[in-house]
Image 1: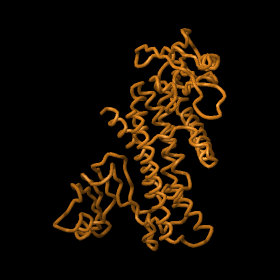
Image 2: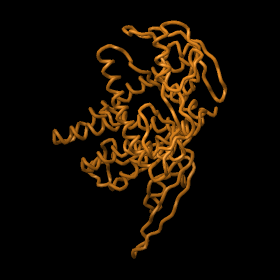
Image 3: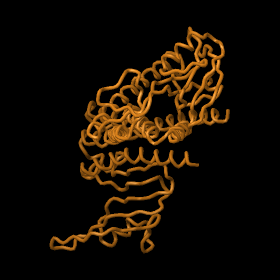
Image 4: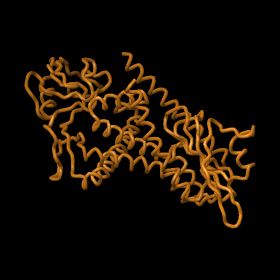
Length: 399
């Protein structure tokens, strides 16, 4: 249950940061924002700023609170009722029953109201691009800020390539399991993400290189592995094997890191957070390239892809390791959303930006029927992919 609560909290933070970017830039660009929703409908309650011109330069302002649709005097909905009373309506800030993030409704976002100045569709191309890009940018900023906070309190870091002179190492360096391949010997014996390897073959280890070299020199013989998990020491026996066709050496199927908790002085931490976020984003784009290339040439998935269930499990595991691990994972998920949303795929922000670029190239608006169809198909394919990956995650948990 705690894992579900933490997952929903992380999801809400990521989505609200994204939507807040759209909201602020739309308002600053002169667009009318109908609603900024926390969670997804049905609506629980909302508040809305109302204004009325009383004449002689006097303007009355007040906040209107309402439950659900907020019906007033049996009108069809609260917006119409308020307009009949002479009030101009502002943005509705709603709180909804499904706690899965949030949303923003901008006037003209689907191409309507092209002749009205406060409509998204009426704005210049560069303003629309800024509004669409702002959500992606906010996910990057969120990741950078989270990493900056993490560096203030101490963040798990791969120390294999060394550290700079301003870093402060908190505690001893250890060998941690960063990733376990599905169906690998490591997964089959019960090794998990976050396990600290204490020894292999009865000999203590201080670096990931020592573990890798021992496995390579051992062939396919059984290996005794001692790990620490949640403060408890545990013993496993695993046998390396060829996991994928074409591999030359047997392995256990786990990714290791020379990890240490590193922190920086507060005046360095935020800068380091943005640097780490930039490097992380580049690495994610590289991973996407490798993933797509292998799918195109028929080599299958070069790495595991997780859906909502898999991500929830990963968040839960990170939370058990400590707040600094949870911060790190949340930042990485936010960077992944940054990379995914900027891709020129219909239904995503990058896809919508692509249509604006096409509009500028052909010097006329793209046919709304075809654009909506493209976004609908793109959304359908994304939902299908999520369902397939989620199903695989659930099967993995059952097994």
